[in-house]
Image 1 (cartoon, rainbow, N blue to C red):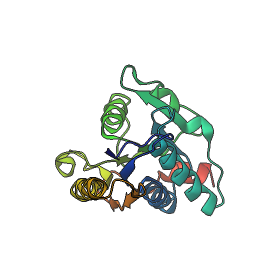
Image 2: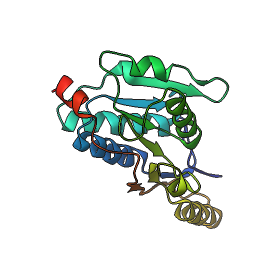
Image 3: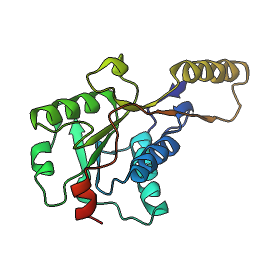
Length: 201
């Protein structure tokens, strides 16, 4: 057996995954360098899923590099059963609202995008949005969404290679392959509003 993409902490097979930690670090650093100080990290519960934890670690590492502390009140959760487990309108009404949302998969990105529209928040003039995973035809949205693009062909190819190698060499050591991602910069990310910059300088 060879697995790909979703990795659990007790994984004992060969596996091929995107380099989630590096991609999350680069995306977070991009938002920080744009001037964002309050970044909302929207994820599923970590549970035993290593990939989810690695995305958070990349997020935290980028903050640490820029000598910033992660605001844990802005690490919020989404589930397939209930959707967003928080109110975006309430977050935006805070004294220190997030000026950017970093979402961790397509379904989360779509839900956050809809919630921002219902809250009347303009992207990117009032808040930026960056999603993990490419959204089909995202470049044609009213505001094209910036994303971390994974490499599904390369992931599938490496998974097949690992599996064939395991069939030929059953006693070989299990391998963990990391496939690089790329940050696709579109129009949904911009520097935060000037009043927010002044407020939190």
